[in-house]
Length: 331
Image 1: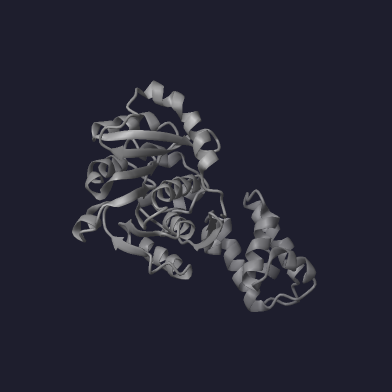
Image 2: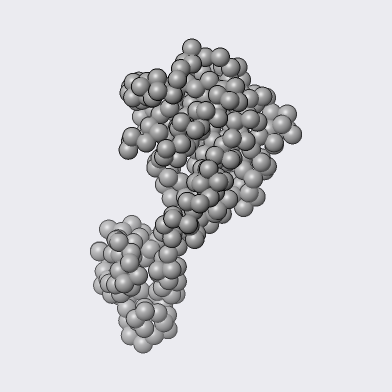
């Protein structure tokens, strides 16, 4: 790395624009696809301003302490650490959340899971309070989005990682939701059983679903930096989801819905597992890329009892209906 960037006590004055050029050059050499933009994000973070403000202040000297912090952030990014971890935050459903290597980085695809939970709760909550459980909460992104957009709801968020729950707690408190979202440490539904939680109207789960053999093929940023506990779904990717399907029925109200995020190509297997565990499949909702992403289930016999082929034919109709009725982001 250029000595003017690398050494915080180096001779000469480095301006904001000079630091940006040097930093962007180093990121480009490291193979970062948007080096200038990422350098701007990192420097703006340390200066406490927006990216556009950097251009107005381009000729200002960059103090040595801020220059060194910028250099440290560049080094982390050049080593392949995800930008969200370097910056310590990510946006989900219009809400900024703290993230760390203790939690999976929230994905845009998971916003669909949150939207479906909102839709289900709103359908139930017009005349009464409603309750939800977020199993495998991680950063708390789904629970926070749901509670923020369905004010008549209260929720419980569960994770088996104490470090992840610490991040979730930070985010929940930051968004003034501590009175409405309770955190439980434990495996899947075990804390609900241990604490005698009443059945929930909606349960949502974004659990590990990457097959163990596929972990090695993930990008370096994901494979080497995000928590394996939040990625590895066992040999077929469905080990944890299968355990949830077996343990969740007592914790769901009779009218309730269980919503599970799944990976590409898993919908058929998840439907089979669900039916084998006594669930009825209400819908399979595709994401914007057309990939089956959320499975909606209820306990017991349902009129929507059909073959996988028939269910597949119904998907697009269901998706259009959901979007016509559904939550408008930011509403």
